[in-house]
Image 1 (cartoon, rainbow, N blue to C red):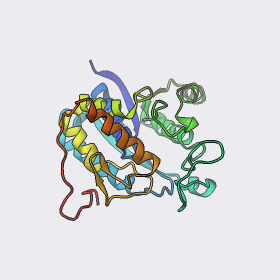
Image 2: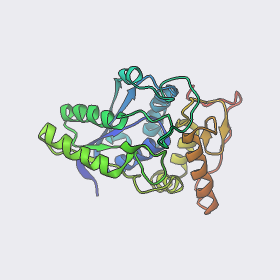
Image 3: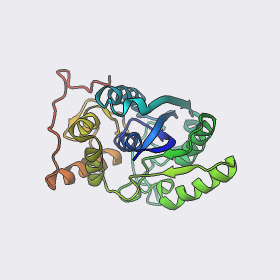
Length: 252
């Protein structure tokens, strides 16, 4: 049964946000997307997201009428106030507090806050994000309690109900592959493998069974480990595909 509410998906062009977008399209009557340019090293994700949006419309005609406008906001200020490996050319490592130095303090809180202002103007009442605290890098702003608290603050601050949905919150990466397969089958997971981008280093030259990436950064490690675990359980609703002749992802 279709939920009549209108949703805004925080869509980066990565595996998790693509799975969440599919979930929202399967659930809500109208869905819009929002992305953020914040001087991230993996800027290629902004290219990937546009390709994925086009392919979702083309390959899933039953979802296409529900997929509305895409919004992109310039949050390059984050690159000025952050000192992290996600916004600066440096080695990715763990800091003294046990967090990877890819953590951009307040990033998800800011993303949801800016998304809420767009949602308010557009008449959208559901915000959807791919945050997860089951299989994640330890980012505190991915935690369920943080986002539930933010939902309350946004609703009070805008004086209108805002629902924050995180459908992947309690799924590990293996379950996330199964989640997207259940929503869109072989076609959706093939699209995720070939065209979404997760690698923090922006690597689109190395093709793995799970997609493109350096294979070593925390994002690649989580995605690859989850894919291997999912396939080990015999969940194989799609076939591996080969990279193009140049060995690079078509989103280029």
